[in-house]
Length: 102
Image 1 (cartoon, one colour):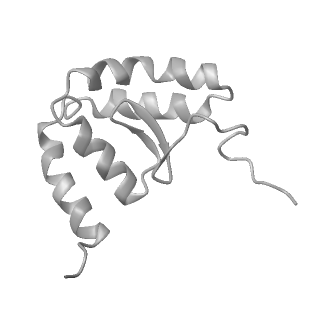
Image 2: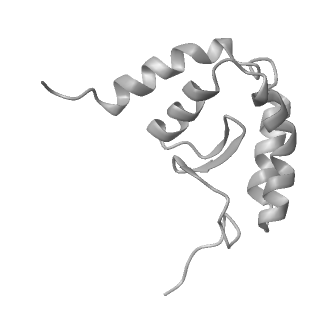
Protein backbone atom coordinates (compact mmCIF):
# COMPACT_ATOMS: atom_id res chain seq x y z
CA UNK A 1 0.00 0.00 0.00
CA UNK A 2 1.37 3.40 -0.98
CA UNK A 3 1.55 6.34 1.39
CA UNK A 4 -0.54 9.45 1.04
CA UNK A 5 1.28 12.38 -0.55
CA UNK A 6 2.06 15.57 1.34
CA UNK A 7 -0.10 17.50 -1.13
CA UNK A 8 -3.16 15.37 -0.36
CA UNK A 9 -2.59 15.67 3.38
CA UNK A 10 -2.11 19.45 3.10
CA UNK A 11 -5.26 19.79 0.98
CA UNK A 12 -7.26 17.84 3.55
CA UNK A 13 -5.91 19.99 6.40
CA UNK A 14 -6.66 23.19 4.45
CA UNK A 15 -10.37 22.33 4.23
CA UNK A 16 -10.76 22.95 7.95
CA UNK A 17 -9.15 26.42 7.91
CA UNK A 18 -12.53 28.06 7.28
CA UNK A 19 -13.47 26.97 10.82
CA UNK A 20 -10.45 28.67 12.40
CA UNK A 21 -10.68 31.39 15.03
CA UNK A 22 -8.45 33.59 12.84
CA UNK A 23 -10.61 33.49 9.71
CA UNK A 24 -11.69 37.14 10.07
CA UNK A 25 -8.34 38.48 11.30
CA UNK A 26 -6.45 38.76 8.01
CA UNK A 27 -5.08 42.27 8.55
CA UNK A 28 -4.14 41.66 12.18
CA UNK A 29 -2.59 38.31 11.33
CA UNK A 30 -0.44 39.88 8.62
CA UNK A 31 0.74 42.53 11.08
CA UNK A 32 1.56 39.87 13.69
CA UNK A 33 3.52 37.82 11.15
CA UNK A 34 5.51 40.88 10.05
CA UNK A 35 6.31 41.70 13.68
CA UNK A 36 7.39 38.11 14.31
CA UNK A 37 9.59 38.04 11.20
CA UNK A 38 11.27 41.33 12.13
CA UNK A 39 12.04 40.30 15.73
CA UNK A 40 15.77 39.83 16.20
CA UNK A 41 15.75 38.02 19.53
CA UNK A 42 13.98 35.02 20.96
CA UNK A 43 12.32 37.27 23.54
CA UNK A 44 11.05 39.51 20.74
CA UNK A 45 9.67 36.53 18.82
CA UNK A 46 7.92 35.21 21.92
CA UNK A 47 6.40 38.64 22.56
CA UNK A 48 5.21 38.81 18.94
CA UNK A 49 3.45 35.46 19.40
CA UNK A 50 1.40 36.58 22.42
CA UNK A 51 -1.62 37.94 20.52
CA UNK A 52 -1.86 35.18 17.89
CA UNK A 53 -1.32 32.50 20.56
CA UNK A 54 -4.31 33.93 22.47
CA UNK A 55 -6.47 33.60 19.34
CA UNK A 56 -5.20 30.08 18.69
CA UNK A 57 -5.72 28.91 22.28
CA UNK A 58 -9.50 28.93 21.77
CA UNK A 59 -9.38 27.60 18.21
CA UNK A 60 -10.93 24.21 17.39
CA UNK A 61 -8.49 23.43 14.55
CA UNK A 62 -5.04 24.12 15.99
CA UNK A 63 -3.83 20.59 15.23
CA UNK A 64 -4.91 20.85 11.59
CA UNK A 65 -3.31 24.29 11.32
CA UNK A 66 0.01 23.01 12.66
CA UNK A 67 -0.16 20.00 10.33
CA UNK A 68 -0.78 22.25 7.34
CA UNK A 69 2.12 24.53 8.28
CA UNK A 70 4.47 21.54 8.45
CA UNK A 71 3.18 19.83 5.32
CA UNK A 72 3.19 22.95 3.16
CA UNK A 73 6.52 24.33 4.34
CA UNK A 74 4.78 27.45 5.69
CA UNK A 75 6.71 30.45 6.96
CA UNK A 76 4.76 32.61 9.39
CA UNK A 77 2.52 32.03 12.39
CA UNK A 78 0.32 28.95 12.58
CA UNK A 79 -1.38 27.30 15.56
CA UNK A 80 0.05 29.99 17.84
CA UNK A 81 3.65 29.14 16.93
CA UNK A 82 6.19 30.64 14.56
CA UNK A 83 7.17 28.53 11.56
CA UNK A 84 9.94 28.83 8.99
CA UNK A 85 9.83 26.49 6.03
CA UNK A 86 7.43 24.21 7.87
CA UNK A 87 9.49 23.92 11.04
CA UNK A 88 9.10 25.64 14.40
CA UNK A 89 11.12 28.87 14.37
CA UNK A 90 12.12 29.97 17.83
CA UNK A 91 15.86 29.45 17.61
CA UNK A 92 16.69 31.76 14.69
CA UNK A 93 19.84 33.69 15.51
CA UNK A 94 19.98 36.04 12.52
CA UNK A 95 17.72 38.51 10.80
CA UNK A 96 15.29 36.68 8.49
CA UNK A 97 16.45 38.58 5.40
CA UNK A 98 20.14 38.29 6.12
CA UNK A 99 22.00 35.72 4.04
CA UNK A 100 24.58 33.39 5.45
CA UNK A 101 28.11 33.83 4.24
CA UNK A 102 30.76 31.16 4.11
